Image 1: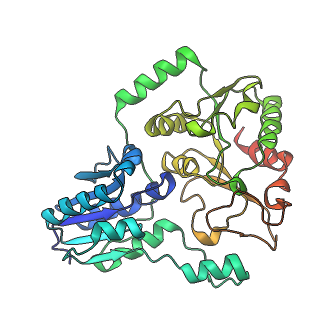
Image 2: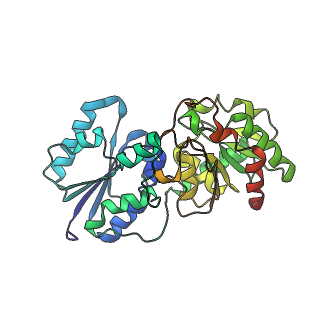
Image 3: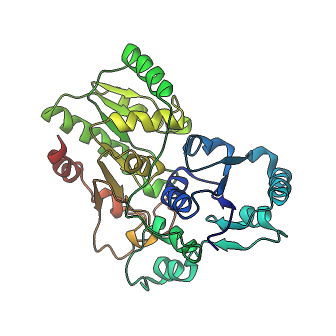
Length: 337
């Protein structure tokens, strides 16, 4: 298998999941130093791998093109005659892309039964939590792709960093600073916004550092209650993915929910305090091989209530987040102040 010359890796989304593939990408290059390694990704996430030196070519899928776009990518892939395909997404879209190809396809195993039993029956069959990057590496085990013991990574060009900090220094704040990502795709993964406000006030009493809020354009209005606090700048929706990564790389630390920006902090080796509510370590998404702390409600019988999060607490009490007080999080952050 090590004679393979052309290799394709598929992971379409999202921020965290794509960053979690970077050890696999790196180790695929180690296993096939002279091979061609290509990657399939959704267009809006392409910056996460755009400058990755281990990748030769990127296929980007525009969401608005739907099935037509997926079939067009499949035609391009078929013409390239890959030796092996690693499907690290393993969903309907990735299967459409690989449908009918006369190429060995190795797919990510998602442990759906174990996951469902833990969520719905509270039966834990996970002997030991295995981080997602290591599960990805298992997909490539037969190809000689091995774990090198290192973490996530993301790459950018110097001119992007220079342009960003020229803009930031002139318009917002000076370094050093604290980064906070108060958002998340689902409400049960969001620590209450008023808790973030209390935390920022407490941080101000120890060391008066600027605070920058990071997130998507859709989250900008959700962060509004924090904007009135002293030395807080809301950059949600104002940065590209690479600019967000660069900014996080310069932060003293990041405070985040279980989101892609949490994984971005581990990729740039910035200390991160991650707040976990409805999701748990067994699903494999804890910060990976970088300085971090995790705050979660231990021993709460109803956790996890979902493997991806919900838009409301099914029991109405939201104890998995509300019991994690600002004082608790603040005390954990003191060692980084």
